Image 1: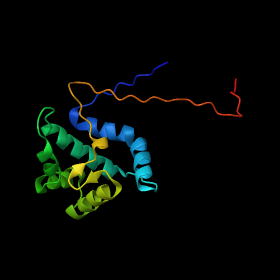
Image 2: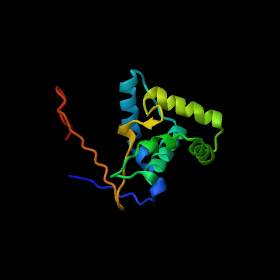
Image 3: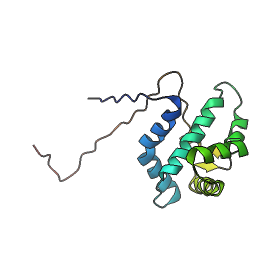
Length: 141
C-alpha cells in the first residue's frame, strides 16, 4: 500500500516545506556527523530554505555554478536573509557559523546533501519504510 500526499505550494514556500518535512532526517544525519544531538531551530530552517531558494534562482543544470556559492553569502544575500528573517546581521552571522560548525555549510558552499533542484512544476519526495521483524514480540490482533 502506498500513500501520496500532495502539497500545493509556490517556489518560494517549496523550500521551507521541503526542509521542514526532512527536518527529522536532517537532524539525525547531522547528529551522526557531529557525534552529538543536533536540533535545527526554525530560524535555521528558514535560513536554509532562503539559501536554497537563492541557489535555485540562478542554478544552471548545464552550466558552471561555482560562482553561485559565492553569491549565497555575499553582502547583498546576507542583507536579504537578515531582512526576510527579521534578524540583525550579528544574529545571522551566528546562524551561519553554526551551520558551518555542524556541516550544513562548508565555507560558502552548501553541503550537497542539502541541495535540492525542483524542476518543472512538480517535485517528488519518497520515503520508504522497511519494517524489520521484532524478535520476541507478537503482533496484537
